[in-house]
Length: 292
Image (cartoon, rainbow, N blue to C red):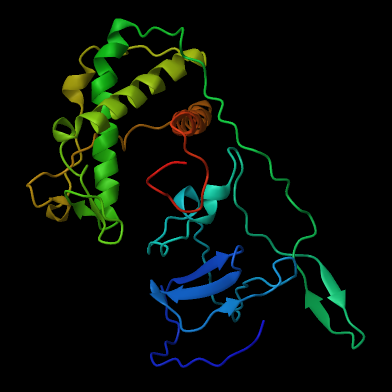
C-alpha cells in the first residue's frame, strides 16, 4: 500500500446502534468502509491479497459488536453499494459463517506478539445443485386444495418483511429506492410471478412427501378457525393493500420439524439454482441482467 492523506469534512464519532460496513474487493484489491450507509473518505488499495492484511474490529472493554453477514446470518440494515454482495451469498449449502477468535500469534525479534489469521484454509468446492426428485410424487386431493393457500400466505409474509425493510410499491424494481412491482395482492401479481409462487408451493408439498413425511388434515374445519395478523397502518401501501399473513404464533414445531424446515429451505435453493443454471446463468458477485 502507498499511503496518501485524504480529507474528512464530516467526521463522525461512533455512537450506539451505528452500522459500520466493510466493502472488501479482492479482485481490485480494495477495502473501503461506510457508516450508516454513507461512504467513509479514503480506502485501502493495491495491497497484496496473499498477505495478512484484512479488516478487524477493535474496541474497548464493555463495548458490544454484532456482526451482520447478510440473510439468516444477520439481515443488512443498509444495502451494499453496487458491485458488492453479502458474505453469506458465497457460502455453500449446509455451511454457516462463523466469527471466531484467532489463536495464532507470531513474535518478532523485539518479542512483540502480532495477531495472525487462522491457519486452516477452506477448500473451494464447485456447487452443483441437487434438489430432491419429486417427478414421481402425486399430491393427494386434500393437499391440492391448500397449494394456493400456501403460496398466498408465503407471499403475504414476503410483503410484510419487505415493508419492514422500508420497501414500497413501484412499477419497476429499483433496489436503491427500495421499490418493487410485486408488492401487491397475490391475485394481482404478474402471471409469471404468480405461477412461480404456485410452482414453489407445489414443490414444497411434494418435497415433504418425497422425504417421507405424512401430511394429513387433522381438522376439516381448520380453515374456518384461521386468524390473520392485524398489522398496523404503517403496513398499508399506497394502493390501500395491507398484507395479512396467517397468525402462526400459537404453533410450535418439534425438533424433527425444525430439521425439516432446514431441509426444505436448502431444497428450495437447490431448485432455484438448478433452474437458473438451465437458463444459462452462472455465479457472479453482481447480478447482470443478460446471462452469459
